[in-house]
Image (tube, rainbow, N blue to C red; front, top):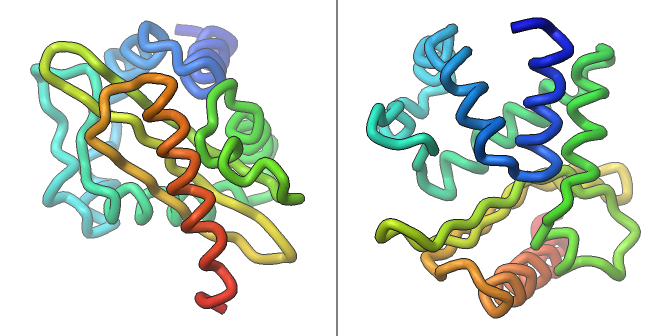
Length: 168
């Protein structure tokens, strides 16, 4: 697979949540350093790859730890890290961005949702940059995806964001 094809798959998976692109990336790269990286982060207890699923599962705490790692990577001044940062800032669906739409912030996120095969979830996680600070947010629900779950997830993101003064 050529570099441009990989970039196109990453863009489709990140910006448009294209499941086929994500599955193609997993098929091509899943085993390349993943398990060593996860063990190195100390989060191998709930992130094992499930060969029966196309999508990873993990808890909100692990999600936040992965996004903290993502923040470190995105802060590097490389062409690839800046490109990925731009993709994450332009996702077509962001419950976090919807929840804090009135704020002057940079949201870099990846939302997810499912309502099939006995799996129900509406989630969003990412980084929020405001006033020279970066916050990590992870919201995971067991609500089947719908307009209502989108609204509720955005409201949860807004409530969490509004507590940031207490965190300082």
